[in-house]
Length: 178
Image 1 (tube, rainbow, N blue to C red):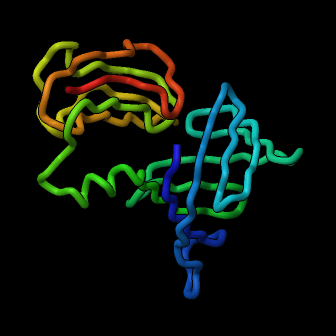
Image 2 (image 1 turned 90 degrees about the vertical axis):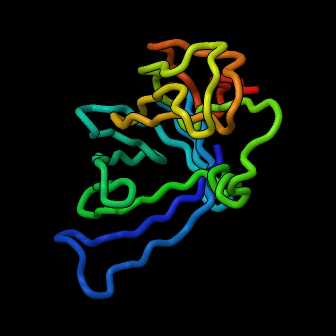
């Protein structure tokens, strides 16, 4: 899955004058089990990540271990790694396309894919149901945060390809709206 990620660093002890501004990066992430492969601005990084406590992860990159805490922030996530804190905003380029098309909306058969790896925790619409553009179809939990997956258009939920409790990978098909 490709994302636009904006990262701003804050030194230990909180923000100070001259703190680093957020920078945008093109990021592609794939996860299989605890293995994560991220390509950041063309550079590939592989890591092992395991949740060791609520919102706290042990991450190993190139043989070095890091303890990383992730929590909701005012405009995205706050990530603590050692003495550093980062504010992270994540945008899915597919949402940019939707904003540009405005009221036109999606046309034709639309296959909806998982935006991130996670677990399906709720199904909000039944297969065969009439749905509105923007209506919630299901909820995926990733990193203790719940993300509602919405219909890209008004139509019928032709196929629901997942069920509650199912683990999904980034990019995996979830549903089809016609």
